[in-house]
Each structure stands twice: as C-alpha cells, then as structure tokens.
Image (cartoon, rainbow, N blue to C red):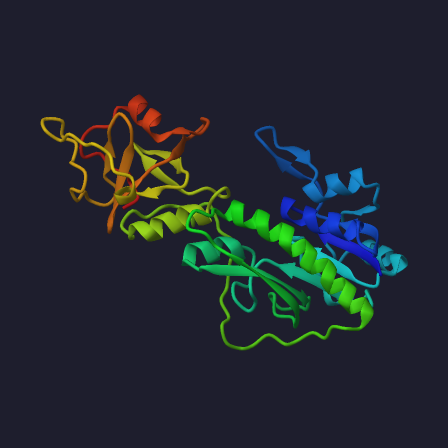
Amino acid sequence: MRLVFAGTPDVAVPSLEAACVSSHDVVAVLTRPDAPAGRGRSLVASPVKIRAMELGLEILTPTRPSDQNFQDRLRELAPDACPIVAYGGLIPLSALTIPTYGWINLHFSLLPAWRGAAPVQRAIMAGDEVTGATTFLLDQGLDTGPTFGVMTENITPTDTAGDLLVRLAQGGAGLLVATLDALEAGDLQAVPQPDEGVSLAPKISVADARIWWTTPALAVDRHIRGCTPAPGAWTTFRGERLKIHPVTAALLVPEAYDSTGSGVPAQGEVVAPGVVVATKRAVQVGTASGRVKLGMVQPQGKKPMAAADWARGVRIEPGEKFADV
C-alpha cells in the first residue's frame, strides 16, 4: 500500500521506521511544524521530521491539517492508508476521507480505556497493572473509532511513563504494520468499541504534576512515576520549586536513624505528611500512609542530584516540610 505516515514525537519514530522496512511504500510524512524549544526558544524540528529527512522522504508540515494546500497535496499522493501515531493535530473530515483505507491510528492504551493525550501516564497514576496499544480507524471523536488489533504490556511497580512508552512504541510499531498488512490482504474488519470501560486521559499540565503529600505513599509513588520524565512531578521547599524523581517506599529501604538528641525521627516513627527527614545517607518524606524515600531531585535551575546531596546543601532543619500538603 501507498502510505502517508503521520506522527511527531519520539514515540512515533519506531512506527515510521517499521513502515519504511515493510512491504508498503511510505511516500510522504506528515508532522507538526518546527516549534520553539530550549532556553533560546530556537525552532526545533520534530523527531519524526528529523528521521524522515534521514530517510529521504517528502515531509509535509502544515500549520493545520485543514489547510487546503496540504489536502490538495495529500490527494495528489493518493495514499491507500495514513498510519498515524501521536501526530498532535486534529484531522478534519475532509482529510479523513482521502485515503482509501482511512487513517489507521496507533494509540497507547487498551481502548476504550484511557482515550486522550496521556494514556500511559494516566494508566500508571491509576495503578493499572496491564496496559497496551490499539490500532483503530480514526474518526472525528476522541479515540472513539472502531478497532483493528491490540497488544498488551504489563506495568511493573517501577515503570515510569517514559519506560513504558519506550516498550509500547516498539511493540506498537509491529502491531501497526501487522494491521496494515491485514487490511491490504482483506483479512481484517474494524470492530466498534464497547460502551463500557471508557476512561479519559487528558494531557497532564505542569500544575497537574504537583505532588500532594497528604495522599498515601502508593499514590505519591504512582503520581511521580506517571509524571516522569514529563512534565516532571514537583513540590516546593522554602518557596522554590523542586522536581522529584521516582521514590521508593521507606519501609522497603531500612536505614539507621539515631534520633537521640538529633531531632531526627527514628525509623518507623510516624511523621506528618510533607515533613522531610534527612540523614547523611537518605532523605525521606512523610505521606498519609508512611514515608517514601527520595531518589534524585532537581532544584530549580540546576541539574538532577541525589536527594542526600541536596539535603546536605540546604541544611534541612528538624520538622521542615514541603509546602504542598
């Protein structure tokens, strides 16, 4: 089949590469326009555009897929199908009807669960034990189109959103090509999504990534892992933002705490949510159900560092706490 591949971030690159080495013919790539990034806010090409340039493919970067010039070019390319992975733009009905087999979307959840922009992040934050990827026929709804195929993936207790996305991107690339193969062979029919089991996965903003230490330790752990690496979970200390990398339950990490005359609570002693307990070797924080041990932290404007190193630098006073409680 003749394909016009649509995608933008890193997670779409494995699918582009898989399509290019398949029996199908990728005739062009659709991706988002270059966007400002970094402190200098200089324009940066998307990962998909960079890889498409390396592959020598025609690249389409309309401001909006509704642009008439883009749709005219899409008709000239006459694709049989448009595989799409995390493109980041709304495809209008006038463009949806151009390819013969439609737009075949690879979505990183087991639909109808977690429809939306952040399915992997929301699955981790909700404590799901299994997720996966689904191929479906794109329509004008929010990930509501009929499905073609699925793959499943276990979520481990230490997975971050970044870890899980890497695995899903690799496995999903094979699922997407298999779907295209079966469509071309006439061996596949789309199946409507069930009405039950629908959940939504809206994009996680920086404000959403704030940690609430008054929630149980398990919820704090899932929240941080779901926000890692982006947008990054955070709290505040002495009025400044502090990014928090994945944590572990303190009960699983025994430490020697000598509270005699030091003002430092002994191991196992209950501390209030948000209270920071620092020793030479470790930093723990109280939650609604016990402590968590910090791993890496990142003060505002600085590079990530071990929590114990950060604590030594700021000289935490007994009873000090993070503000988000």
